[in-house]
Image 1 (cartoon, rainbow, N blue to C red):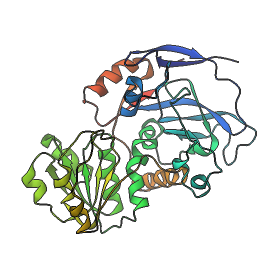
Image 2: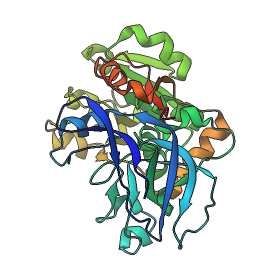
Image 3: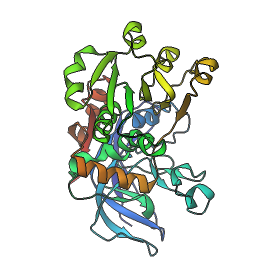
Length: 338
């Protein structure tokens, strides 16, 4: 069997090097996808650095892959050879547990991440179970679509899961790769959008993306002025903030929702939740069905991530650019093995 050319980290924190691997036989429910583009996400950096303590090396990162199906197992349903699809953080689930049967495949206890224990999308090909290979609809450019399959679905999920309406007032904390998409989704959903940022210089950009209001996430007075006004606050940052102050911006029955991996404890007084029947929640990605809905929504409303492109052969330069915080707002690698 031909070897697959890829880029891999050989140990935690190391630069990626060219790496070849043999994929093994294709399972009956799997597809092989010839990678055209793959997003570079902060989660890739966390896996490269073993921040979450479950990385295995050599590690081929890349979990926002776009490409065409070039091989199919015997039990594939609803897909065809040559079809352009995308694969995100999850590449398989058991399909028979209660969450899977109930349409919450992303909650499957036996799900497998695309870059945990198997090679990811910084390669010529990536492999996934058919249900997690989501067809790309017309109207979405393949060269920018990759970040939708992780960052996009991560911030889209709360809108579906919690019944957010067009009259809702939504706050977005942290305007980077996740946050700028959350603003675009909320605006297209019909919501009034408040952007919380520690970079006032972004104000003009954020208003152009769809924010109705921009406040400084480190200014207690600006935050206090929003008391009791927001129905949903989506937190995309991974750093500690004054959570009690941000919770105070919630309206009755409002929700503080975490999609950023804040590693420190979130300190909030219970009474501040009880008095307004407020909630704190979190989520990661979404189900395949909701990923398809998100793509349809993006196509309908002309929503696309704002990206910078690097050839995949310049992966280490792209990683330095992302680590520096200079990416605006996502990075996409274009496969250039040939």
